[in-house]
Length: 171
Ligand code: SF4
Ligand code: SF4
Image (cartoon, rainbow, N blue to C red; front, side, top):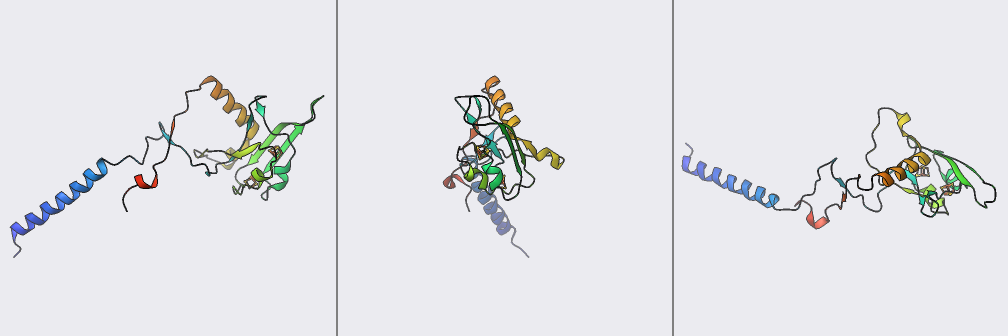
């Protein structure tokens, strides 16, 4: 027959071990955030879809429609068009389409661009019901983003830096 006192002692021991672990976690720094009200800041090397870079001087896309990125893309998912306005030495981009369903995030386009006019976005909130939603008009996305930032400078939730390795949960 089992000793009831021993069983109670074993149960209490387990209870205190569990409570100690709970308390230990309780006072650790949070590694999760209240999504979607808060979002994590993506690390510098994070690769979202490519996006056009804004030329701060002109307020327009920095792209000069040279098509180097289009030629460099191994998946053939970029289509760029541009025109050369009267009196200007460089073209301005009039269309920049990305088929993100075929993009492998290889960076060939970003590396090919001598004007530093494209980069990887930090966008990770991508979801859609059909693949057509991932045929992106990057010029329009840039314009929409610029307008939104100009009209609602404080609208975006402040990204929170991710917890460092030392702040992560114990092994
Ligand atoms: S990251 Fe690679 S696959 Fe994606 S658009 Fe650029 S070159 Fe093409
Ligand atoms: S993004 Fe860069 S490489 Fe591509 S067309 Fe524009 S300027 Fe040329």
